[in-house]
Amino acid sequence: MRLGATLGEGLRVEGRDGAHTRATARVIEALAGASRDLAEVIATPVMGESLGAKLGSDNSDGDQQRKLDLVAEDLCRDALRGAGVGPYLSEETEGPLTLDPAGSLAVAIDPLDGSSNIEVNGVIGTIFSILPAPEAAKADPGLAFTQTGRAQIAAGFFMYGPQTRLVLTMGDGVDVYALDRAQGEFRLVESGVQIPAGCAEYAVNASNHRYWREPVRRYVDDCSQGADGPRGFNFNMRWTGSMVADAYRILTRGGLFLYPGDSRRGYEQGRLRLIYEASPVAFLTEQAGGAAIDGQTSILDIPPSRPHARTPVIFGATDEVDICQQYHQVPAATPGDARARLGAGV
Ligand code: FBP
Image (cartoon, rainbow, N blue to C red; front, side):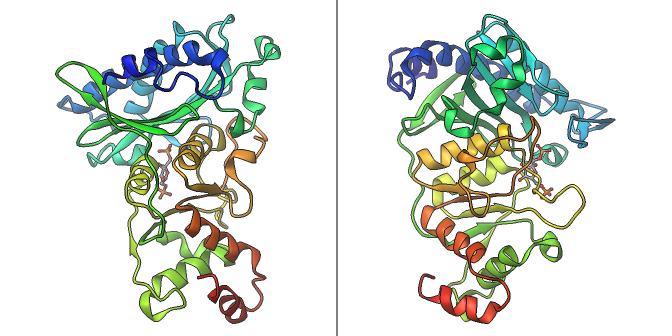
């Protein structure tokens, strides 16, 4: 079934907020159009300067911008302009903007997630979050982005891999669509996705091991000891460098993702941005029966301190997130004792 039909015919129209349903469908269709165009750009070979070329400019958060980051930003923003969106916040904008003063919805977006994968033809994505636009946001669009992730009406991501896929929640489960390139349409391929329980795989950038704080180091060390360690199981490890690809794998076959805060300058709260990276993925994860925390608190309950605020992120199968959370609760002073205490629950 086509995306437009599932939105239009109301498979998910009740969503969390009936009043916003039609407006939400319009925004999702606009994003799907932008993503289809972006998929085409990505798939088209260009001679000379690559889409991954660094531009010498930084985005709002100090990351080097690449050519494709700006192409993606332009496509998404242009598509949303005529789709009833008021407040707009992107990884590529300095701060919140107003697209349509009469818009009833707010959109936060990372137009191009996984930028470092562009030049290696790896999986990249677009992550989005759709929120209600409070009346007061007409005068100050930033107010729309002070809401916690619980306020999200819909969220999802597009991933540009062997297939272009859309993973979407409107607060009533998670659906997956695949782009039919010949027809130029997204088609429903899976409904009601549930993250499998248990954990055979974890995802973390292990090159940061020396910068991690105690709880994360103990958790990962215990996993990496495999069957000989306290977890008694030979875990596999996967890190794609693109959260959408890791998130999709976890939605499909379970596991855990971690991007913790660490001692590097600027990484005290990790790398991922709360409003347009962590919150939408947390919403999808919870809707698929999983959990997403910053170590202690549910990502969806964290109030944003500023538009581009970062947060440590741990998400995946609920039982494994619970185990990882226990490592954050057990006092770090006596790792041996802590492990012994965890032993019962591990
Ligand atoms: P960008 O939005 O700048 O691409 O950063 C997000 C991200 O690429 C995630 O998709 C990924 O999980 C993480 O950064 C990888 O970070 P690192 O290179 O530190 O492993």
